[in-house]
Image (cartoon, rainbow, N blue to C red; front, side, top):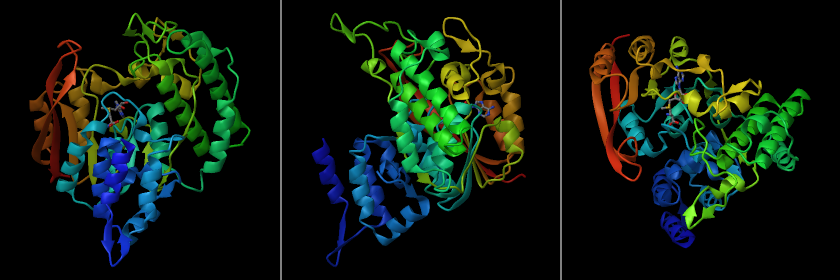
Length: 428
Ligand SMILES: C[S@@+](CC[C@H](N)C(=O)[O-])C[C@H]1O[C@@H](n2cnc3c(N)ncnc32)[C@H](O)[C@@H]1O
């Protein structure tokens, strides 16, 4: 597998008077070839996998001058194990697999030189990350703190605020901590995590707070360490990626009677890696209600990806949010959720979604509005269209794909249509 990829990479070099030169078009071509290895490498901004972290300006100048280091960085990245990047997270409704549809539609309609890109329901931030290649700055927001951390660290880090060397050292120390029986153990051991990992999470989370309290790290470094913990917890959690339930079988062998019972990662000791930094401090990250924030953000392009069904994101990610906030609230029920009404979204409530959506569209200060909304969403198509048309000319782009489950049986795939609505704003 690796051999084949290397061959393809070499095929991406162009020779010019005996010296190798690379154009940005080559890089895109090469990254497209790399798609078989990692979808996320599709855009050159996803050179995040570089062993050495990189600045946006530096990367642009490397691309423009045809610097060969860009290529060696890509090759190195394939062997890099000790960093993680934004798209390494499984997230409900993530647009990671739809970027090849959404990204080009945005660029074709809004152009390749976008001054600012606003992503008020940013989740993991994959869409903002993709748009960094065409937007001078991105403004990303999510109502959950656990998501805000990712947006803040991945999109807004600067070399002044983060010492990569310091982080590497902290992470080595955090990984070596002994388990401690406390809040995480009492609430989440034996269900979501093994006893050992629950104890380690406790020790690591406490130590991160302590490092910051003792001013041994900056707030930005603390956020980066918390994000490392979040991604590491996600990897060893006994779930399908969401925390509204945990799986049975913790304690049983990975394989029993020839059947796969449990993900072997659940039993591996939790191991933190550090985020890969793409330094670009022109961007902004917020943790707000999208409707409130929209009143104060002016941006050329707004991309809306609100929840479209009744599943509340905070129910699916309560555990991550709980440990990131670290207020140690009382948890209730089998799934050990904390009291979280203030984090529930009106976009997942039939009685409120249309009204909130109308208010949001009315308040946006931008030239283009793009909206992702699934064909099975709470807000009816006729309402979406009526509301969007209040701001200008509407066009709808569609992509059909298949998903598993939801009544069709777990083994059966069924077709769904992803729609991207575009309004060229005429009425301000
Ligand atoms: C469909 S997901 C977005 C996925 C994202 N585009 C990605 O690719 O990862 C919707 C997001 O909206 C957030 N959300 C829900 N209601 C919100 C609100 N009122 N304001 C801000 N964010 C909200 C959820 O926490 C969730 O992360």
